[in-house]
Length: 254
Image (tube, rainbow, N blue to C red; front, side, top):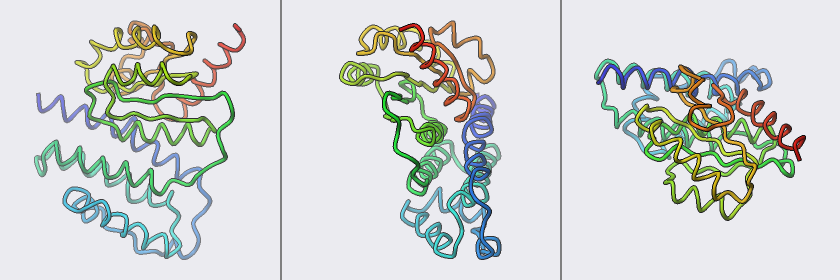
């Protein structure tokens, strides 16, 4: 069981979290001379802070680097992404508990939200609800996907601690073009078809498209159709592209 959990965490890190961090770096401008020579935080030390310190302590570390001229995207690539990997190693080697890793990754998620640069305002008509399927614990990847949609000028609503009833309430009260759901555990996969049917049944948009992601679908993308979804995506960039395709297809039908 422990091997399965460690494998799951590793796949989530490598297929969802770290690629998004590195993509943000690749799209950023070249660092200044001051940034290139900056004394970036030691990864082991930063991972220890992520486990043991308050979020404000982590914020102060990044703010010092930003004040020295280091772009946030560079910190994502050279500090946060390696820290995420290191946390996975700590879990595999019994250095810290699964709860420690989950809490630490949650702090990294909040850092990404706080320091991500704002883009252009969202375009009208492009709305998406992003949620972790009820019972899911891995939500950092979802935050990265949300940032990718915002970069693509979508209006994003997030619910990382959703219940089936709260999601149904959301789609009853607001019109979404796309619903995106992330699934990392096979046990959650068992309840996904009923969740998707329920959301479609009560959605204000009767033609709403459903996009799914997570390590389960990265390994077996054919499960998306079995669960009743319209498509699956392995990372933020492909999720934005597929959501746009689904929206265009719906517009063409109308």
